[in-house]
Image (cartoon, rainbow, N blue to C red):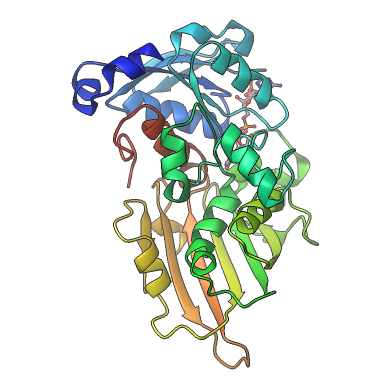
Length: 345
Ligand SMILES: NC(=O)c1ccc[n+]([C@@H]2O[C@H](COP(=O)([O-])OP(=O)(O)OC[C@H]3O[C@@H](n4cnc5c(N)ncnc54)[C@H](OP(=O)(O)O)[C@@H]3O)[C@@H](O)[C@H]2O)c1
């Protein structure tokens, strides 16, 4: 911590100082991505990398050999910033331990996100934000900069909320509207724990929804965020499993108060100058975004319906902008570095 306060200058950090970064859950999908980003980051180095069942196993990140240690054996005092890529329920304890040891923390699990134990009302959202800002970076940049702990958003909420914010913040959504989100994710979104329904033969050449009936746990943080912005819209969110390794594509139908004359204007204006947001006149696909820390968004007015309705399509890499990439964006801000440092655009 003291090094962060004393160093303070980006150039100095870049040329001389490498921040020591620890990763909990480093053997998982998000954790491996984090380790690779840290190993290649010009202002960071890996201090420790933990695993549970795979403690003692070896991996290579950025050309360096790394041995996974148990979380209990991680030298917390060595790290100035810690990422937790542990499953929800297992993470909060280690977030607290790392913070107590003096590190800033970015938690990729749902444990500290609004709507998960903090309720979903505007007051609860404010208290969750004060405790650990919800790190949808493009929205919460100022709060993240001054924070000690950041709750990194989930992958589906990242793509959905970044697509919706320009409409919600401009009051363009019809009062009392129902917003329908159909989103499809690659299989890494489910983590590495073996499950029968995620085996190759079950997933390959198939396509199916899950958690239908508005039962996905990511709804809590999406609702909390929209409510905090004064939205009274309902959300119907249906995730789907895509037979690819990574990437999420969301198709979102939004009833509007008025038709949009320049349909892309809300997004181009809202996100002007944002390095990781691509507003596009063409329809995004996963190939546009995988292995990149970007969200690509387009929008089209629906024809042949009585109420003005816009269809927004947005795509991200669930492991990059939806997890490790956004986490590193937040970490860069916490450490006083350039937000884009070490991130693939
Ligand atoms: N995957 C995504 O697209 C994505 C996107 C956004 C956020 N997230 C969030 O990021 C976190 C990690 O997700 P993931 O997909 O990377 O999961 P994962 O592949 O299942 O990896 C989980 C990691 O945590 C370790 N672990 C599991 N149980 C543990 C315990 N009780 N104590 C200590 N370590 C434990 C695992 O070690 P072993 O390998 O040794 O078992 C592994 O390193 C989750 O909270 C998830 O919700 C994931």
